[in-house]
Picture 1 (cartoon, rainbow, N blue to C red):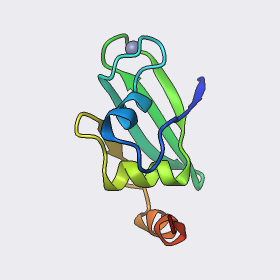
Picture 2 (tube, rainbow, N blue to C red):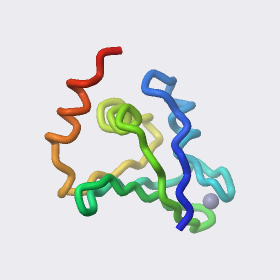
Picture 3 (tube, protein in one colour):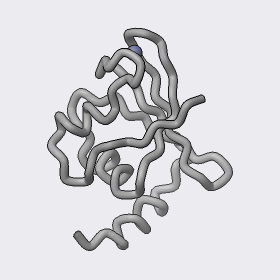
Length: 97
Ligand SMILES: [Zn+2]
């Protein structure tokens, strides 16, 4: 599975964050993102509602923080129940921007 780097910044407007979650194959923004933790590491998978493509997304801690605290309204971001809230807490403490 191809891994793409997420390209939005923590303080980007919703439209840019939404574009960062768009399908790398057909550029549709009708995508779902499922965020899980596997073996202690972040595992984010995207799926396109239009063309059916799936991909892995590499998210920096601040991008993860943005998606958890202030996701764009059109984004379909789902969090695994395994996702430890403490992980986001640690990121938040490091965030001094
Ligand atoms: Zn697509």
